[in-house]
Every structure is written in C-alpha cells, then in structure tokens.
Length: 108
Image (cartoon, rainbow, N blue to C red):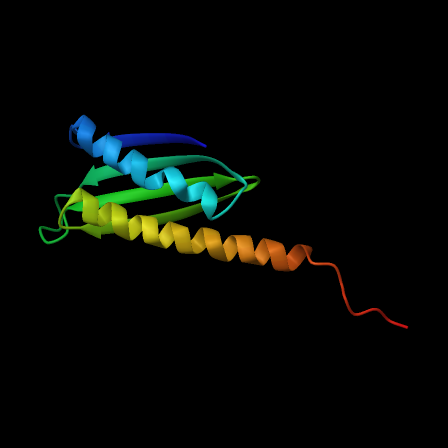
C-alpha cells in the first residue's frame, strides 16, 4: 500500500511522520483491496481546543473511504481518524463479503 503523509500549515518533524506512518501500516489488515492512502496533518487556527486535524483518504478499487479526527495534539487526532477509518474499512469489507455470498436458497 502506498501512503502519502503530508503536513499542511506546519513543518512536521520526521519522528511525527514516522510514528504516523507506522500507525497506518496495518490498514490492509482491515480491507485487502486498498491501493493507497493519503494522510494530511493540519494545524487549525479557528478552534483553540482542538487545533490539530488529521484527514485520511483510503483508496480502494473503484471507491474511497474518508475519515478525519481532531485532538489536542497530532497523535490524538491521528488516533481518532485511524479508529474511524478502521471501522469504515471493516464495515466495507463485511458488506463486500455479504454481497458476494452465493445464494444458498434455491428455488425448487
């Protein structure tokens, strides 16, 4: 899976990027059709309580999943976004699996 991590409105240390990169390494465990992911790390100025935002776009074959999280620090925001995208990927995988199940009820 290709990942792009891009800080917006601030310069992120390499340690932040490495930690975020490592956190999102296991996303393919939740859906096997992930092709890539874009992760945007942002500093917000409008809301002093939650001034960090992490946006994630995960690209699947023919569609995408989007999630965002805010927090007091970039790690808290990343954790919230990660939990949301993980849940969405699991639900998408379950829907895909249910949709592909053969019809066990045969007319006869």
